[in-house]
Amino acid sequence: MTRSRLDRRPPPTEPPATGLHRPLLAVERWTKETLWDCRMCGQCILHSTGLTCPMRCPKNLRNGPCGGTLQDGHCEVVPEMMCVWVEAWERSRRLPLWREHIEHVERPTDWRLQETSSWENLVSGRDKEVPVGWAAAERRPAD
Amino acid sequence: MRRDAEPVSHLHRLLLAGEFVVTAEMQTSDSADPAAIARAAETLRGSADAVNCTDNSAAHTHVSALAASRLLVEAGIEPVMQLVCRDRNRLALQADLLGAATLGVRNVVCMTGDDVSAGDHPEAKPIYDIDSVHLIRIARIMRDQGTYLSGRPLADRPNFLIGAVENPFAPPRDFRPMRLGTKIEAGAEFIQTQICFNLDTMRIFMARCSELGLLDDVWVIAGVFIPNSARGARYLRDHVPGVDVPDPVIERMDAGRPERQREEGIALALDVVDAVRQIPGVSGIHLMTINHEEAIPRVVEAAGLLPRPEPAADRAPPLSGNP
Image (cartoon, rainbow over all chains, first blue to last red):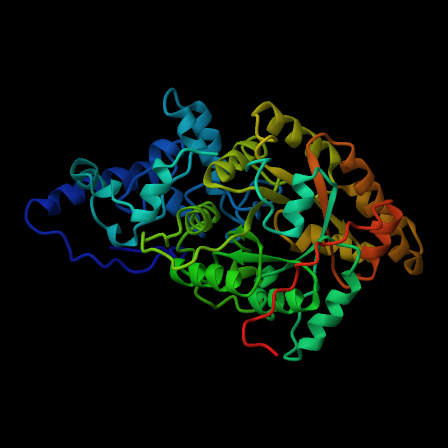
């Protein structure tokens, strides 16, 4: 696994994939890294972000841009890079589907899922597991 | 946000009553002497309904927001405690939320925070375990469900007014009103905006929020900066990410002789205050300045916003065991 200079995520904690999981993980990584510069958080929300990986944001923001976006739309932390959420917003407007997904609250990151397969986690439902308090909040009616 | 809620703080009471509120940002302190914070707070007494205690603002270390907030409570001035996601993970943030409640803090504002790269410790490890939207919802979980994020119950739940920030002036501007909607969905009850110089942008933002039906669900407090000089205005433009300082603002500050610039800054802020008061849906102003704190009472007075409503007598709950 190579990590870029700007990658500020904590190191992964899950043991490396074994058996059949290994080729599956390799295919997912190759596909998503090539297409979307994916960071393999294992809990993919690309459908909510106009197919823009939010973990490329130096603040790992999953619910929209911070207030520090520069006036030219670039990132305050890495000024040579476009703000990930400026890209996410523009791309989400061009998507034929999932356009409204960007409006809703995304769950807190489960850092244990890093470097695991989001495809497997989707099928197994692992990526839907949230802390008990959060799950209760999602069930509560808004006031 | 419920209009028929029981007020949890003085600020909340005024917002519920439909008052046009005034909040102000307290000068940061680098002193171990509590009197330094008391002095900074004294400048704002009677001018602001609640005073923001910043949390390592601009990614520079200062006295903690929690300590400053408690000192304000003891001084009989209502604090708004800011809490950023840059320096603490979800455990520490919840500990500070609960701790703040035990110390009499009744208003909190949750935000992501300026990046460490902008501060005096750029080599630090930034945390960003959760983002501001997560933190808002976690504060609501603690208050409304009486548990931590994990679901483990609290013995006594905190009670605060939960705020957020929004920056209408930074790209992607079309997305910002919708992002405010996300913060409301997470549970924000009021927002303080980034510094407003660009009134056209502010009007467009508010109109769009109104179209989205957000203004019934959140109180919007507009951020107003009082520059102390043309240099100060340039510093904001060039060194504070996310602040939009249009050229006419710089030109106006430049036009005056240097010794007149402090006064010009007050006049400029006053014009912004008068303009934002006319924008439907703006519930108050949040005054900020750098090295110009004495200007805050002057702006509030010149805007015709004095006297401020008296807080109820039940402020400043002492710590149990205090003499």
